[in-house]
Length: 164
Image 1: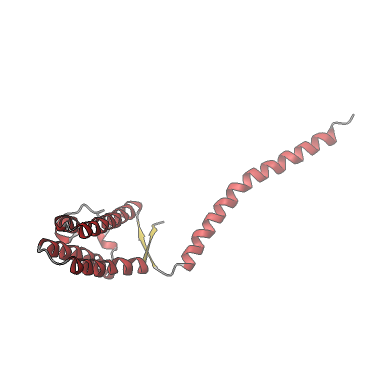
Image 2: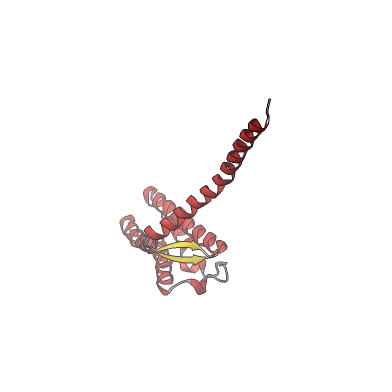
């Protein structure tokens, strides 16, 4: 019995199997790369390059804004204006003047970006002052809505891209 044809068949099967095993990771990586390039083409927002540390800082600040917005709304709903004032003040300019930021971040922020973030923090200061003065909840909520428009504008304008 001649084993050579049988061994050649097994070798061919092993070679095809090995080729498939090696090709799959490359195909997956290619698909991932194409998806990210497609997102770059379809997402018309301005990409802002940040390091991973800068991106983490910015996203952490955004989450803090949202957490405070939820707490402000809860405070307004329950009539707890002290809570509203405390949460709003925590996100305002005064409380964040000495915020530890990545040292390279400020130089990368455009004037428009700085203006939007300044208006957000200023809006929180205004909400804190209104709540401390026992302003009507409707007035405070209107200020919060105006402040949040800056968040909407920023998210419609920019997307964070990790620096290469």
